[in-house]
Every structure is written in structure tokens, then in C-alpha cells.
Length: 253
Image (cartoon, rainbow, N blue to C red; front, side):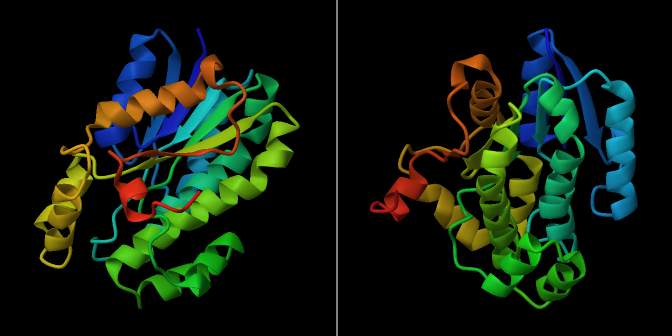
């Protein structure tokens, strides 16, 4: 059995991934703001350092995989938290665990979104990609919630694609899932939000397969990308969204 680590394993998609990994008999280290093996706030630099130290102490011999799943939606009052958690809370941990992943030829599955291609601020995305957290946070507070969220997920996918060659040469595969509307506590809060609710409901009603996604749908995709059946898949952004992206951008490849 393997040794894995993940963030955001307390609820939603992360909880489904946690359940699947443990049911398969794997050792799993979970980081979250509550109810976790390592309790840490990934929205802060200190929290990210604590998460890395905790994982490294428990996995000194290496990791077979890592799933940075922690994230927040754009409807939260403190929008500056979105880039800090969604982007920096992911890329800093992936980079900080790179040697442990290389030691066991591990794989990483990031959680982007099918909203990643949506319009956002390029200045915001560039601040993220440049590692300028202060600037990204400053821009986020002046933006609407959805572009803040989608921009964080777009930057995450672009970062992943840029890192693939270097990581692959050390035996570490990077891939990402791009969930569509999935029934979780986070999306329930967005649906109830006065600003976002109507858009979320229209989004769900337009999903070609005719239903919302479930956390288990995302977990199955993540486990496939983590495992040996996907050993030649590297740098992929897998849309797990009931056909919504294909409907919205039929000519995009």
C-alpha cells in the first residue's frame, strides 16, 4: 500500500478522496483547518510552513502521491483569502514536497475548476504566477467573487502545465482535475449567496448530463490520475463536469 498526503480532506471532494484512499488501505496524511491529522491554515505563510513540517515529519521516506484539495469559493467576505488558499496553499506545498514525491516516483493531482477558462483579470493571474501574494490579494479585494475564484484556478492550471517537464524528469507526474458543479458544502453556500446564487443555479441547469456532480465523481477521477493506470498521463487538465466545458467551448482543444 502507498503513502499519500492531501489537504482539504474534511468535507466535500476532499472527504470523498480521503475515504477512497483509506478504503483502499493506503496510509494517508490529511491537512485541514479542522478535523485533520495536521491542523493548519493554508491561507497564511505560517500555516503553510506548519503543514509542510507536519507532512515531512510523517513521511520522511517519501510520498506516493499528494492531492492539494483545500480551497475556498469567491463568495466569502474576505476575497483576499481566495488566492492565498487556492493558489499559494497549493503550489507552495507541491514545491515543498517535491523531494518526497520524487523519492517514490509519486504523482500529484491538483484541483482546478471548469471555471478556469472564464474571464478574469490577467493582472491578477500574472501576480499569482509571479508568486506575488501581496499583489494578488490586493487585486482580489477589488474584484467580483467569481473572477477571483476562476482566476485562482486558471493560474493553478497554468502553473501545473509550466512545471510538468521539470517534475516529470524526476519521476513526478502532475495532473489536475477540473470539477464542474459538484454538490458540496462550498457549492451549497454559493447557491445560497444573493450575488452568486442565480448564476450557480443556471450553471447547474445547463449541465448536459442533467445532474449535479457528486464528490465521488471527482474522487474517482483523482484516484485514476494518482494511480498506475494513468502512468503516461502527465500535464492533463481533466474536466469532470458533466459535459459543461465541451458545451461552452466546443472548439477549444
